[in-house]
Amino acid sequence: HLGMAGLAARTTTTTTALTAVGPTSRKVVGTVRGETTEVLHIEYSNRDFVVITQVGKIGTVFDVQRKAFSARAVFGQRGSDIMHIYVRMVASLVAPTSQKPLTVCLAIKSPSMDDGDDLRALLNRLGSK
Image (cartoon, rainbow, N blue to C red; front, side, top):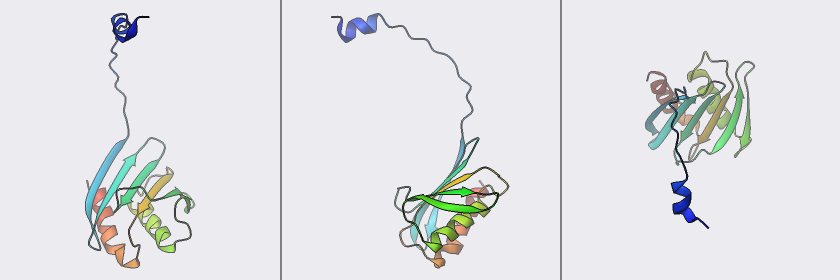
């Protein structure tokens, strides 16, 4: 029985430099109807991923196909028209020329049509970074 000390003495470490290119991300924080709101956009090679949260969680997850716009709730709240409007806004303002599929996560405390201008302004700030 060697124990951890014996194992460590027999272990060698090899370090290899990797020049991996990972996803790029952008984040903005602002207010939507007085609530602190974080927007995060991560661009993967095969998908765009956007989180909009007022509660520090991912909330409802939508899968969006941009070519023939379709969005479906994968996890979380289903059947909310206002959430689908938000998803359409995200798809049109975040990487609008991308043809990659899009995942949108929404965790908005009290979704309302009154949020539209504030949310649009945040998304525009995200695009200008």
